Image 1 (cartoon, helix red, strand yellow):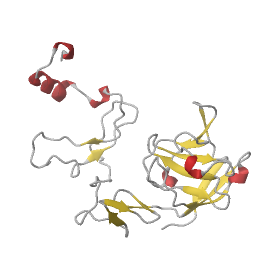
Image 2 (cartoon, helix red, strand yellow):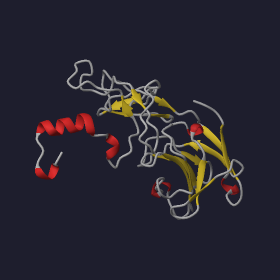
Image 3 (cartoon, helix red, strand yellow):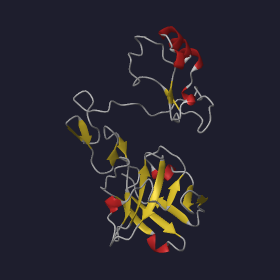
Image 4 (tube, helix red, strand yellow):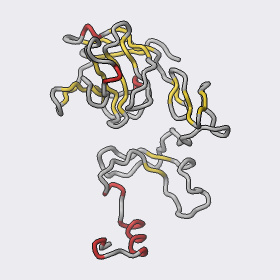
Length: 228
């Protein structure tokens, strides 16, 4: 449509239904739903009952419609109809989850209660037991693991970037709540949307402000010690 010259409703409708594609925008499409029939009663104007798919990352390839994701959408608020799971408490329509449970309705269980992490030099001293923490970052509502004893390193998830990150700091000068897990990190995983850190793909260490190098398994590894 000739937006500068004015576009009528019919032209805009035609453009959005036939020519426009979401990939034209500057945003990445993380998920796409099944086709929706406009004004269809069966869809009810809500995305909750729809099937969702994962498109090819960093490309305009369509999603595989034979493989919908298993995750489901939930209402963001809680009430008598949409209660909190795993003994979470509904306060002012928001679930307060117990340690080890996450999600808008506490519906996600943390897989690992603690991790054993091993580093090669020069970070060998940071290796050891990292336990599930009650720390809640401003960057996601996912599990946070901090090293036992010194409390000067953590594994956390950055929702904005879609990466698990590893950060460490001087505990005598910096508080854990001052750490931005989306920028103040030493290493990050590849993109993942999983709450389970064990499913995080390969990791990369920061070489400088914008460059990263792949981490070898002999340099950084971790195992889950137990499960909830």
